[in-house]
Structure formats: structure tokens, C-alpha cells
Length: 94
Image 1: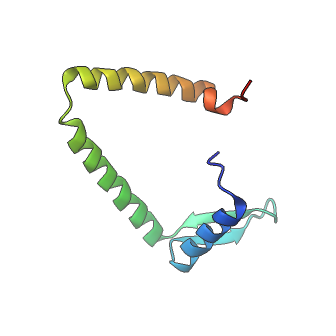
Image 2: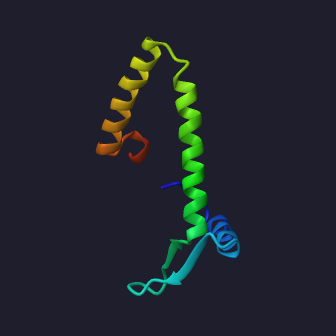
């Protein structure tokens, strides 16, 4: 969970609805819940941002040494393993 406060999330969703990026409806399964669906404009904006981040990251990775790339590869393996087992961030502090 991102631990975003409810009022903050409500304002964010409302802004996205106003800007035509998402559609909001009540969940048929639980009337207390909302279902958000990205509009075509929301999907376009999301994909454009994703493509921009990938281009930037690809350009930055091209400047790394073989040793640095190997270190990132090892780190990615560890992060993937932690994600699969519900890593330390999901565990309660002692």
C-alpha cells in the first residue's frame, strides 16, 4: 500500500475525473467502493509517460559499466525475490 491519506486520494481522483483521465462509478459488488477506469485520454497519458521513462532509463543505462550493470542485475534478482515473498516493507517492525 502506498499509504496515501483518504482526503488526499479523494482530491487526486476528483482532479483526474475533472480532467477526463478516469471515469468513476460505484462498485456493483460493494456500494461503498468506487471503480475507477482510465479513459482513452488517461490511457494515452499513462502510456506516453511510461514510454518517456523507459527512454530515459535506457539512455542512462547505456552509460553504465559492465560491473555496474551486473550489480543492477543482482539487485533486481533480490528485489524480485523480496517482492514475491512479501519483503521487509510488508512485515511489522519488531
